[in-house]
Amino acid sequence: MRRGLAVAQLIVASAWLGAALLFAAVVAPAAFAALPTRTLAGALVGAVLPSLFLTGIIVGLLLAGASLLLRRGRLVTPGTVGGLLMAISCAAAQFVVAPRIERARESIAGPIESVPSSDPRRIAFGRLHGASVAWLGVAVVGAAVIAAGTAATLRRP
Image (cartoon, rainbow, N blue to C red; front, top):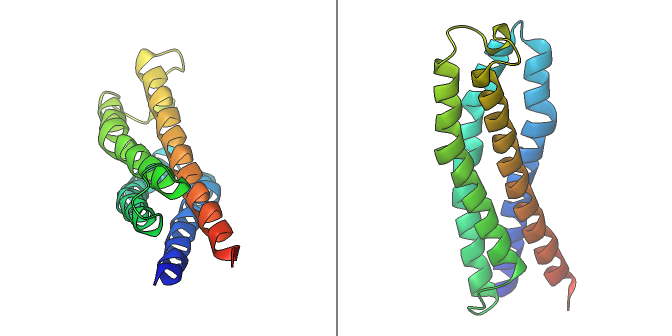
């Protein structure tokens, strides 16, 4: 049973990690390259991110819970730390940063790129975008820690 749970943990962590990396490395850049305006690309990316962040919260909590079972209640393990890191960072991105990004967008009447780069609203938007990317990066690190730790555990006899 423990081995089966570890295998499931590895699969789930790897699947979410793959989805996050695909989004960050392929989907988002392709949207900005292929769509006719940055506004449309931003709308597409903004429509996909909630799914990634919400699943990151759920998956992170499930993986932390699985790690507790696998490690017989030990609280500080790569799986619990990585899972909580995923869940907390995705929650911060979705419930703290994303609403602020939306408010920043609403404060600008047109496309963000139409506002001078020195405008405080555009600067705030840029900082929030950076925070969202950073939180996603933290979640990716958490998922990678779980996947690597679980893979190492499965290699042991």
